View 1: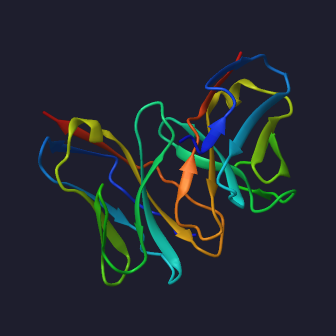
View 2: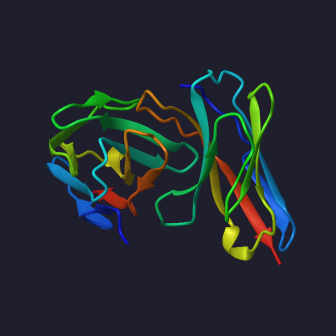
Length: 112
Length: 110
């Protein structure tokens, strides 16, 4: 019954590494989102995509990029990981009718 | 998209109703009110949403004021497993950007 799958639950990377976080949804949703969640700050939107190859910046896009080559997959890329990108990353998808957003289980990334 | 304001934390006795308030005074006419909750170490889970009318499902009830500037999520018989952070957000059906605040941390106590 899994609908939104994130590739890793836990990830440890070194400063300066290029990091890929993958998200796949099986609901044929048009809209996909990447958030990061930090204590006391709630969920903050990094990037979102409303169609294949389309992307829009969210509230905190600096240091991140995204890729949406296929409808079901939305990738978050940290070009050069830094310690301040240590966080929980959550992927979500919503259909065009915007009735309900489904979230993945999250990836807890630690940059050392 | 409108921003929301929620109390940072609330307590509730097990078996009693939990009433979680949310202010969204800048909500516009085509924005829905959504509630999600997040149990520790899991992704947020959808609870309920509404536009103008009160809504009820198997999990909760949503009461939206007539002016739509605030709403209340009601868990009719809270259990220990309802301990979580509850997020109230507003979402424009024509748009794609959601805004999550810090949410309300609900503690259900035995």
